[in-house]
Amino acid sequence: MRFLEGWRSLKQLMGHEHSGRPLNVGLNNYYRFKLINRRLILVCPGINNLYRGFVRESFDVLLWFPLNLLLRGKILYFTKYCHSIVGSLHNFTQDSELVKANFERVESFISVQHGGNYGELEANYIEECEKRYTDKFVFWKPVANSGVVQTRYGPLHFLRIFLNSFRSPKVIFVGGAFVGNDSRWPTYADYYKLDYKKFINNISENYQVILHPESEPGRSDNVVLGSALNRIGLFDTVIFDGTGHTLMYLCDVLYVNHHIYVHSELDLKLFSEQNRNFLVCLDNQKKVINDIDALRKIKLPSFNFRLVIEKYRIFRANKNGPFLIDYLKDNF
Image (cartoon, rainbow, N blue to C red):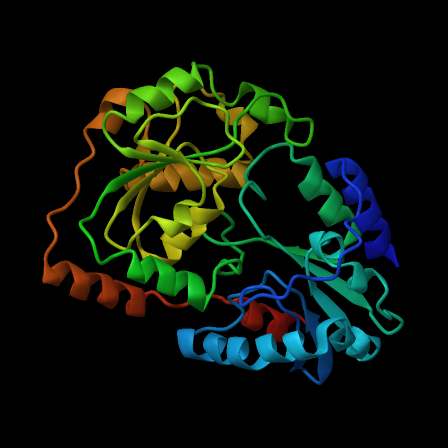
């Protein structure tokens, strides 16, 4: 199977061995089978936003999460009847049982973007590996015009953002894990032409700063390492230190006000053409910030109930997709 060869190449590229452990089933981490156009399709863990609508997706959580808990690895028995697999080559690293499944009738593997950086950098070896060994690679909107609505975040993530909103709005700066040269993403070595530690300490005087757990910059009382998802609310203003953040796609879906900080000395040739076009669109919306002085001037809108009504109205009016289920129905 070509996609199994791709998984082995990906494992070697990422520099770690298979864990040998079965899937750790969770509310956002389970298998489901779908009959689409009279063909059985395996939808892998990590795809949590398959359908249009909070209620429909929540129904699948209530159905498939208990089944996965009950059957564990045995649920993969039905892969021998599957026509296609929808997921990522990373799924084989996350579950030792998936590698042992029967793929005799599988005709295609549809790989779906599962995080930031995909389609955003001019050179991304992991993306190139996944595209080479799968039959189709599906990108996310809005960076990819022909993509689908993000699939990483589902009902439980939406609920968490909503619950985080019952406090005063904040300005939150979200930083990545730019810790030096990384052969998987060679452009990272040149991503910032500034002292990032000094920059973070400077920003933390004005805003709450949340950094990726693998980041190295020094911490202060206003700088924390961890998941920004646990701290962002609907009415916050979020500033991302460049593109490549998975959370940016969630902010786009939920209409959380967000900006991209792109340092003025950054060589935009490091980005893919579609990402450069995306940045132009954001710049036209005054969502791109190029210098630290402009960064410090960002202010929160005054909170009032009309803001809640307006955000709900926009969310309902723009819920168009396409969603992954639409793509699968149209193409398979």
